[in-house]
Image 1 (cartoon, rainbow, N blue to C red):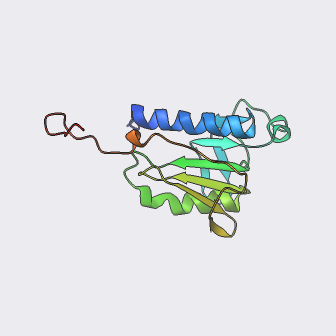
Image 2: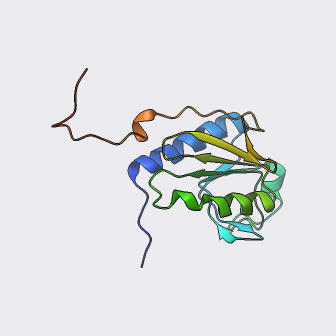
Length: 145
């Protein structure tokens, strides 16, 4: 049975995060690329980034045979957001320097080898549109200001 496709709002948020990371870190970021983790097998982070020399060090037609320096998971529309723990550990144990988690409310969490951090080790900041994280109220009951 095929997996359900991500919603339009999730895809917009993914693209927004990707664009902001690519702008801040250089255009060697990618979206939804399979990576190999030693502890959790093949995973597909929403966004990855690594220095150009790492991109040049392997055949780019298939999955990445290691974990990139930065992995991002966007939990928007995920039914089981609580299962992010094993992914975090797999990315970090596999060599990621940082994992950014975008919560279902649009909050950024930065994780490194020493646990949750106050800010990004790479200096990354993301400004995400609140409207993609709010539950929409039917227009017949909404209040206009």
